[in-house]
Length: 55
Image (cartoon, helix red, strand yellow):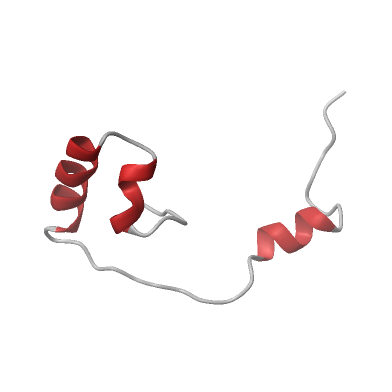
């Protein structure tokens, strides 16, 4: 599972009780990998690469 939201912020996208239970279950045996840097997808989208306009 990937997310641009830190697990402590999951309660901003779902009810607090569900966020707590989900985070607990996901993190029980998980390896948390935090990355830094600019988004390659965002940079490509901003210059029009990889985006096909819908007509």
